[in-house]
Image 1 (cartoon, rainbow, N blue to C red):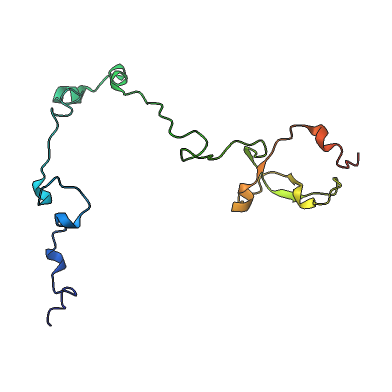
Image 2 (cartoon, rainbow, N blue to C red):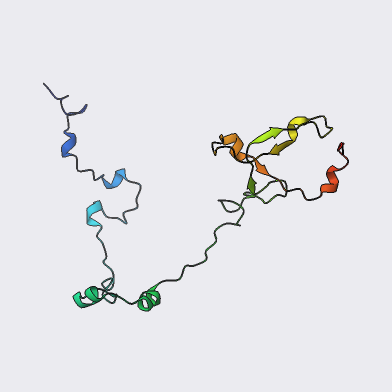
Length: 158
């Protein structure tokens, strides 16, 4: 069966330790020749020795709510970025009065009430129909009418 049984170069993949040589990694090893010779520094003191529930008596009696609340760490309000999107230093998703917050339901075309050249721009929201909207329909949002007087000159038949 020859040398090609285990791999193309004749080595057994199960005997491979998975540890790369120092020259094959991108880490700076501070002059250490072997990765395993680098070492590890333990913490200065043991973790959790001052916590509640370490002894058998504390574990069996449980901790009071006031004790748990006293140990709770407050959440820090670290807002990353400028609050306009998911990345910092960009325009992100600026707020716009042309973009609505409320999702539209099923849209029906204009019934001819408005005299305009582009009827596909006007539709009426008739509510969510069976809850099975396509991605395109779910992307449509309702823009609230700020001035109803603005639309009065568009040929309202009444």
